[in-house]
Amino acid sequence: MNANPAAAGGMNEIIQHVFVLMLENRSFDHLFALSGIPGIVAATAENTNSHNGSAYAFGGGAPARMSTDPGHEFTDVVEQLCGPGKQFMRGQPYPSIDNSGFASNYATTRTEGTVPQTGNVGDVMRGVDVRTQCPALYALATQFVLCDGWHSSLPGPTWPNRFFLHGASSGGLEHSPTSAEMCEWEGLNGFVYPNGSIFDALGKDNYRLYQDHLGDPLGRIPQVASIKGISVRDVDDLAHFEGDLAAGYTARYTFIEPSYGDVVKGSYENGSSQHPMDGLAGGDQLVARVYGAIRHSPLWDKSLFLILYDEHGGFYDSVKPGPATPPNDGAAARLNASGFGFDVYGVRVPAIVVSPWVARGQVDHTTYDHSSVPATLQRLFGLSPLTDRDRNAKDVLSLITQTCRQDCPARIGA
Image 1 (cartoon, helix red, strand yellow):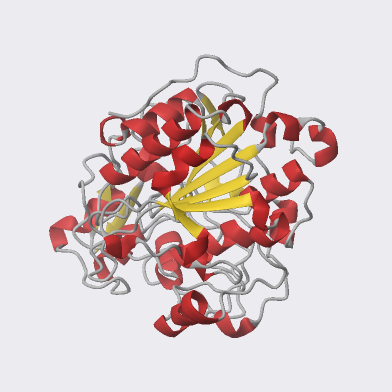
Image 2 (cartoon, one colour):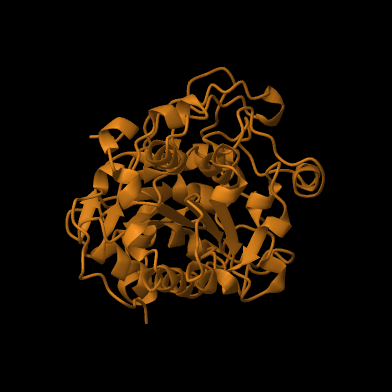
C-alpha cells in the first residue's frame, strides 16, 4: 500500500534524513540477473537478441570495461526496446516493445562514437558477477531491499533522467543536451522546471549536495549544478561528508553524485560513476564509503539511503517498460526534439533501499521510477507534488517497518 502523510502518521519521526546516491549507466539484468538472489525477475539464457543472422543470448562474462560506449540516446533506446531499425514517429504512439534490439543497436549506432568490433557485439547482452565485482552493492542488496521494478523515468540518456530525479520532469528534454544548452544551464541561467525542483520545495536549509572528488579532477562537474538556483559552490566535497554527519547534521535530503572521470577525452576513466568504459570498482568503493559514513553516524537509526542508476547505458534488460504518467507540467516544446510524450518508462535499472527500518533480504517488485524520490520526500515531509508524474508515483515508505534492526552490517565491501 502506498504511503501518504496521513497514513504515515509518525513516519517522519522514524525517517528524518533521506540520502540518495545516483550512479551511471547500468541495467538491472546487467548487474543483478546472475547474482543468485532468490525471487528476482531476471534474464536467462532464453533471452536473446539477433544481429546479422547471429543470435546473442543473455549470459555472463561481461568485460570489466566496455571497449566502446553503448548507445543510450532516445533514438538508440527506441531501437533497443522495439527492435532493429525501429524509429519513433512524432505524433504516433511509442512503438511496440519487445526488448529485441540491444545487440543490433550496439553494433551499428554512432551516437557515442565508434561502433564495437564484430566480436564484441554481444557484450551488451552479458551480465557481471556482482558478488565479486561489486561486493558492496551485493552486500547491501542482500542485507536490505533490492528493487527489481525500478525504471529510469524515460527511454533516454543521463541528463533528462537525472532531471526527473530532481523535479519529476525533464522540462521536455529527451536527449543529451547540446554544448550550447549545457553552457547555458551550467554557466548562465540554469535549467528551469516549470514548477520548480525538489530543492526549491524543500528550501535551502533542508538539503545538502555532495560530489566525490577522488580520482580524475575532470570528473568534478556536478550535473545537479545545472539547475537554476544551484551552483557548483553549493556542491561540497564528499571528503567532508562523514565529519558533517557527526556535527549536528540537520538536512532532510542529501543528494550525492559520483566523480565522472575523464569526461574531456570521453574515456570516463578514474571516476566512481560506474560508467561502462570505466568499470565497476570505483563506484563500488564509493557505495561502501557512503554507507559507512551513514552507518557510523548519529543519524543511522533515522535514515533512509537509496542507491540508484540514472539509466541503463545501452545494456540489455529483459523487462518491458510499461506506460508512465506524463508530467503535464506545461514544459515548453523547444527541448523535445522527437515529440515524445513522456508516457513510457525507460529501461529497468538497479535500486537498493537501505535503512535499519527495512526488512533484511527483501525483493520489492513495485514499479518505481526516479520520480519516486521526490514523491517519497513529499509524502514524508508534507510537501506538494511538482507534476502529475510524482503525484502518481509510488514511494518507498511502504517498505518501512515498525522495528529498528540491530543486525545491520558495520562494514561492507572488499
